[in-house]
Length: 587
Image (cartoon, rainbow, N blue to C red):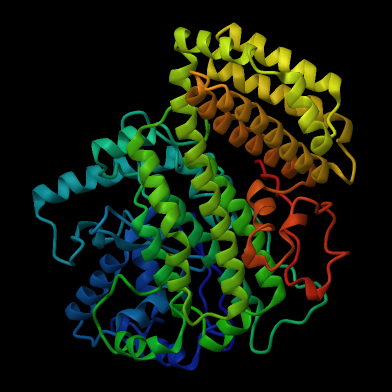
């Protein structure tokens, strides 16, 4: 057992047979020794039965319970005592290196699957049901044809995935999660998943998810030694699990099963010692459980996990990953803040945002405070962004009706012409110190655009042009974030003075102006937020997170970060600056 046998070639598939188990604990090695009873009286190693009946393949999966039931049937046929499900799972992972686990299926009927493995076409198990019973002749004919058809379909759907799932951690799954106008396909098995008509209708308003899970390299410790007891294998396992966890989060969000996110978080972050009894009970049972391997603690020892979750490079990796991933989730849920979307979808997103912080805080109870602070701060930024964008979208739809009403536009124009802009400018000049010529041009442009009865999209283009005109002289300069923030303050103050004048004059169109003002203020913030993020090389969520109270930083400076690395960071500041936006890798 001390020497690793050479790779075994079988029908074009290479297997890395693990002759030793350096990454497994003592209990696992004992279980593997006990698992030699898997094989019949041929004296072959325990891996031989698995290699004779299963093979790796791209884009396919098998229920974990199916494999275990196959094994139980094999043991019954050969009068062998089976090992428990946990030991059998470790054995499979030692034979098929890189095998991943997915929880697939519809709500209430999901099961864990091994992703990237299938029954060999030449195996007798092809004629066995999932529960281990033989397939009848009629079932055998239809099942064989169906499996061949599914295999051909998945091979066609995954022929663009390069060298396979093992070389594309975190990307091979999401690249197959393409939207279909009629059918929503499961992100891993490519089998049409059941969805309600309302879900299918709402999904057409969602954005592209093909690159929603960021592509990151390995965690770089540099010259820093690994924490005591942590190996490179542990590090790799953690990063792979974290990426796969985010893939399941994305799937739940895309299928609009928002409550499933809480369950996924609870399962993944169950690492405190209160679960020791539960884990022992699981390991002593011979029944397969769909709750195994759904959390970090199932594959990493507690001491290793605690050390990893306190290591600065790991914390940096998670913070970096979360900012990019959450930004992508926002763009999936609200790809266009001005586009009309169903009120049911808007409300579902708002309820989701309202629950995020409490869900994650509760799920991470017992985790190190360092990782909890990073995770909760990032998800708080996600929640705030979703709330703001859904409010912006709601304002846009309300304002659209006003801008399409010619009589209201005429009244607004008449009331606006009665405003004493000279007096407004005199009062605002001491506070804003605005360029008089610029203010005059904006006033004339606003009246002209209003008179033309432009659409909401045309107003959005005008607002974008205003932002570009005002901020262009400051682009590329260190004070760009500061100037952008000053512009927002001046815009808000000046528009409030106009609204004040309309109020004093009891303008008939005051309600319409108030609505338009709310929309334009919020959209201006949206535009400036993205301009600042782009200038710093950050995601908007990373920029906004620096202003949250949970970061323990001066909120007045959160848009003033100059985009450099951590050269100017001081330990007493409490947090590191937000990470730079990562560019997507292309293949």
